[in-house]
Length: 257
Image (tube, rainbow, N blue to C red; front, top):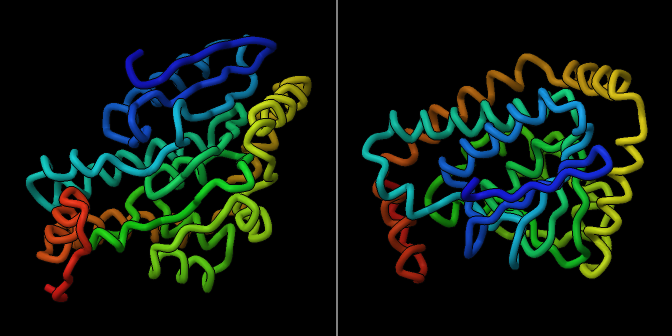
């Protein structure tokens, strides 16, 4: 496959995002991840999935250049729904998915990581949802998942300021499970994956199924509304200005239109 690499050993499938330079979560990356899940679902040699990023980042966000090819708010809402559906599938997947995060997990990259069952980070990793810097909003269920991990007030601060937090702070807030120095993070994440892979896949699957009952119906209503507003906000002049400013590497000037 073009945008991901995979290695399977000891019942652990290690999947690496490989979409230089920042492992942007494009629609093609989403399709490829979905295909990987199709394969893992039928493979008895895979009991745990370890998701990591090649290069400098886990994933520094969505593919902003791809946004410029979207022609309508309805099309943008569909893009949002596609990501939401895949990330919901990851969260409900019968085999545990562990995100091993180094460098940065921002925007769509953090939304992908938040859909995983467990997050292991480097001490100095940057995690955040900076979409408002572009005049946009998170669109892959980030507005609904982040408050579940860090609380409503902190989630509001992270989204409204666009400021990221460190891996160490992410652990303190409950957004990540463990933080390690960069040189040993992947080794530690692999140890955890192997520990889980040694359990009965039947009982592991049962626990994952039971975890879904912690999500109220209101959560899904929020996810649906997020996709609607994702498209509505995209159609504004501010969103056009934010995307242009990002691509031109300048500060945006928002007018509230």
